[in-house]
Image 1: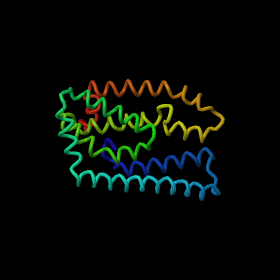
Image 2: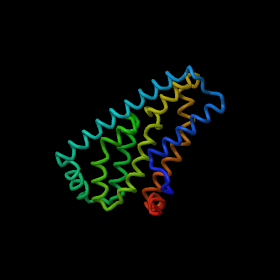
Image 3: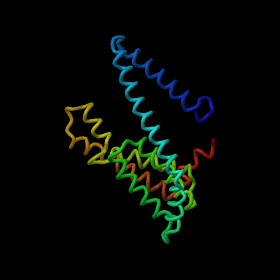
Image 4: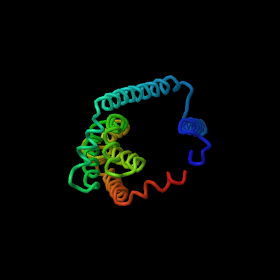
Length: 195
């Protein structure tokens, strides 16, 4: 993708083909598993499409009502530094991310928060990177991180307390990464600037 050989969709397709080849080479794939695999992929894909449809609809209604512009004017005019506003938005994303799926959070809130952040003078690409980091941090943050319960369902022999303990170093690392991205926006913009 970085070299321009593949688009994002083509790179995903190539990755899926390589993953399938690894399964075959490790003899982890059996032909009789195909219907179950197809059903699971279809279920997941349809859920993502429903989230996308809902996100597009809410973005359209937000735009039609002028909410992003109103929020940008209202919050951009507050007598506080921009980093304070961005930090409060990140905190809200962290809380929301613990109870909602990351794709749903981004689809519903992207237009409003992007307007606010750009009105504060921040780069929208930088905000996209920060938003992905904070939402993904939310889904692994105890006590309600959705991915923690998904992990529990995959490995029922592991207690939820063990999962919480195991994920805490990753949460700490992600918080440090988020602080660095807010303090030094160039970290998020360096790689896109090469494209």
